[in-house]
Length: 161
Length: 161
Length: 80
Length: 80
Image 1 (cartoon, each protein chain N blue to C red):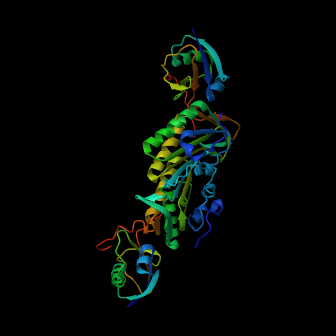
Image 2: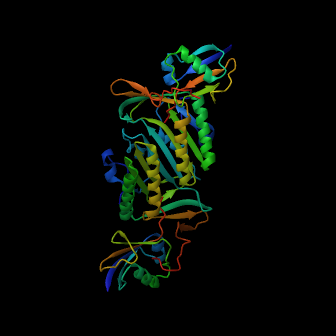
Image 3: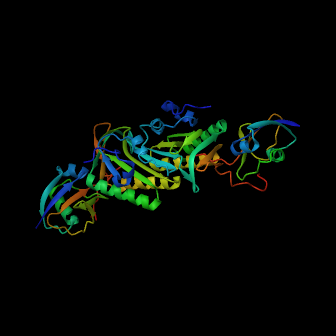
């Protein structure tokens, strides 16, 4: 289980790659670690816990993360982004556990010589994280009930293959 | 002349809009001001002073800003981005004066309910800032000479209209 | 008869009422295993976009299972 | 004869050797004014993508000038 995050030396960014954190994220600290005098810019994405989703008032969220595979797949996504867009440095970190409204659930940053590829790479990483990593989100609603996002209305009557 | 930056109350973000700063930028502080419980995410771009440009080693930079028009045009760009992409909050700030390698020259942030439009709006804003605002960049090179970016090799033999 | 370690995540864990169990089964692959487990756990619905991992690798539902395999059932993900 | 306040920025300011000057001119528009100023300041080259503002509004090179106007000559910008 990885509880620290972002506490790494610059030259290790690539090796450390994707992380899961059980403590609040510190975006400034994450950004600072992507600094490089050869880079002209940094694009970051922060995902925040919204107070609503699909018309329902959300009070808090719980992220369940299967860490061994989330980290492995997260690393894979970062490696793909570096190779595909030719960017300098990439980093991503995802929260696990209970989060309040407004908290940062995921942080992705990309620094590179030019900005176009940093935008493309950052977008690629967050899109893939959302689709591929074994992470599940339970929303707690005003009124007392709760639900797993993407799961409650997708019962599949036929084979799942 | 505007020397403070980012010191504004949340509800004033739209009114204050684009800024020019003569002091170092604080990205964390800028980000924090775009926080909104209705927003699901934040995309930011930071432009950094690189140690090279077009094959030359750069030692430092000087930004000259004509503030009355830079602020007016910057506001216009932010307003266009909000309207065009339907995002919640937008903010941009540009440095003036002498900057060392690695310093943040420009910061743009966009928060919105969904991430796709935040990426598009952030990219639009930085692209337009670079093309439209009356800001000039002088690079000081290793070897002692210097040059105004985009100006030194663009003498135009004919009419300028 | 294979001895398998089965693990359930998120919605699946809640529906089954446990995070994992030891299972003895003749199921040839995860697809057959899941169908077999559904007869045992009424709440274990098939969900669109569910996934399976075998020994910490994402796997095809038709991957052959071996004795001692660890089979992880993932409901649809929602990171970010 | 119009009395105009002319201002030079960045490379233009350096080439002319001053940030601004009072000019009396019959130039009908910024284009004519710039050409006239070039005869006075050898370093004042026409640059691709240069711009002009009149009274703090970006303007067309053919905008008619009036007595008392403030005319700002901008070399190609490079923000960001």
